Length: 243
Image 1 (cartoon, rainbow, N blue to C red):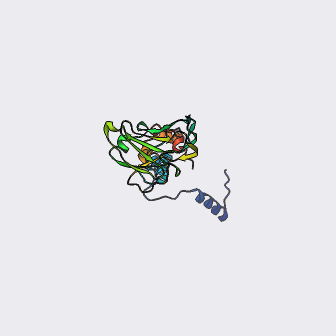
Image 2 (cartoon, rainbow, N blue to C red):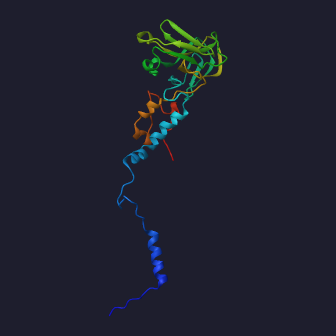
């Protein structure tokens, strides 16, 4: 004959408390297998690094969706006629040396910008030459077409960009006159829409649209990113997002 041990009131209370602490309260309209994590929420979480990257660009920019500065020095550091032109990798150029002959050093061509969409038929404001610049020593130059050159000697210059074949020779350059000594002067080339009143220097950043067009898998994986042929380091991009 089996024997059963009875538990007293304290034992019943102990079991009740133990079971109650592990239970899940029932909610009206929900079963044990209800999936409350929606597809949208799942996708939003998966894309979070991508969105954080895009939003970070938007917050860093001064004119929102579009670029502020549309040009970026696209050249390797080199010496020409006694003068060294250093691409600093942050949108600026350091010039140092004494010119043994006149120099027109090209820093950015029509092929380095999206001329048709960004410049053609529009007015832009170009600046970035050091305050010590002059037409007889050194300056930031812009070749608008085969017959038109403009010069920034420290105060900036407004340019009406032409269309079609007339713009085929469009480029930005640094001019150093023969015999001129340039002592580590820093050029900060800028090309902004003439309607933008804040002309303080800002390196070229990708537009928000360009960021949104990036491969999400590359962004999330932290792979190198290239925008309009520009290197990641040139745009100060850090594609790796940590939380």
